[in-house]
Structure formats: structure tokens, C-alpha cells
Amino acid sequence: MNTQEISGNLCQNMVLFHRKSQLSYEDFAAALGVSKSLLQRLGSGHGNVTLNTLCVIAEALRLHPALLLTDLPQRLEAPVCSAVLSMLLLYWDLPEPEQRTFLGLLQAMGRPSDGWL
Image (cartoon, rainbow, N blue to C red):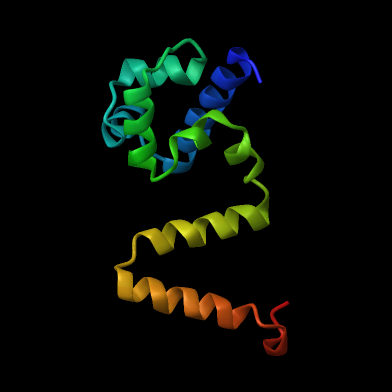
């Protein structure tokens, strides 16, 4: 993988996450802790980002920084993957006791004897 591919992945991921947020550029940039101009440069593929900025963006999105540099978020756009990702995002917002309950419910739903698989 070369720097052009990595930069392209970052660009596509920023556009993807901005679209999913349904926020204006200003609000999305503020939520990420970056300037609107940097967000626009990243979305157009012309921005260079420091490691620190990449980590700030990833933390705001609750993602590992390396994920922003891959094409995995784009591949997760398939309906099933999108549903799983939505459930994971819901999980992260729950307090710890509710996370255990949520995981227990998901595990119960996945048992073949329950007819979910």
C-alpha cells in the first residue's frame, strides 16, 4: 500500500463519516476537534494530517486511528455490516453494566436454537 492509497482511504473515510453524521461541515469539524478548512482539505484528498490530528479525529469517531487509513469503513457500507456497525456504536454509548446486558441479548439472539441463525 502506498501513500496515495492511504491518503485516498483517509479522504473517502472522512467523506463517508461526514455524510453519516448528517452534520454541516462546521458542526462535523467541531465534533472532530479540527478546523473546517482541514476537514475540507481531507475530504478533497489534499490535506496532510499529523499523527496527533489523526488520533484526535479517530478518538472523536471512537475508532482506532489505523482504521481511518484503510478501506474497511467503505467496505462496511453493505447493509448487514452497516447494521452490525450501528449496533456496535450503540453498545459503546452504554454504561458498563448495560453493555454486559446488551452483549447477553445479542448472544441470546445468535443461538441457533432460538431460530435467529
